[in-house]
Image 1 (cartoon, rainbow, N blue to C red):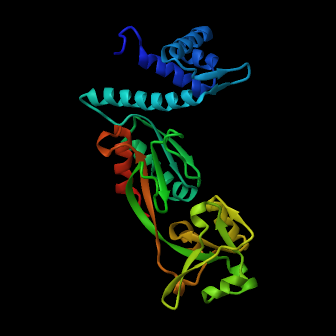
Image 2: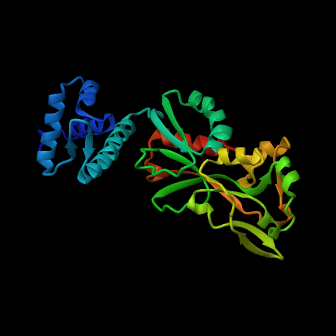
Image 3: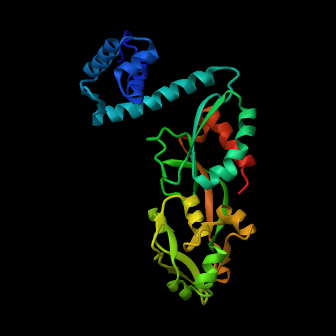
Length: 300
């Protein structure tokens, strides 16, 4: 049974801030405490738990495995406590920091143009947006919502579908003028195929041949993790790239990229989802508001 004279949430909050700010002195400044007081609080916490949470050195502070687990659980419990207090309010409104992760193309061309409208509707929310083509761990990165393209595999995640986009193989007019335009899948053997370095993209490009779907290995001289960079390399005439239609649409319309092998395109759709942790009925108001806004306004 918990002792009433132990402020466990307060200890957790100080410990979390020590980890996030990288040391006792920085946390002490944040809480207007002395470094020795913060150090003693963490020491008391370790004594009560019966385990070491951090390894201390003159240069840096490092979490032990037990400290890493306690940090992750503390972050979640403190967030739940904040949510409980908000839910107890008669006039709950979306408020607080909302951490969002998405890839460069979706972020720049679809999400960022909508940010002013979302913030106008939710003035108490602070958006923290990270643009990266890497798939992040939502819990590890403390991300509230990630907008992801492609099939989902992580069963821990709850998802709301936002749309989908067909895939298209494209090249610059200059590249095609120098190397020729492929007409059938076999023609790709003579071309430089630019690929993503993500594992899920390495099993080849799907194409139709005589009514059967085949996979053409991506055998070019470059792989890259950034979709915008891949498209830029295609624009520079380095080779062929297989991109989502939403990614390449503007460049194709402007004539800077040309679709090829459209007669062999299987028409596969790359879905786009908003993914998040937790059950929908118990989400913070800021997350619910953002998800509802995406479903209503994001058109892919």
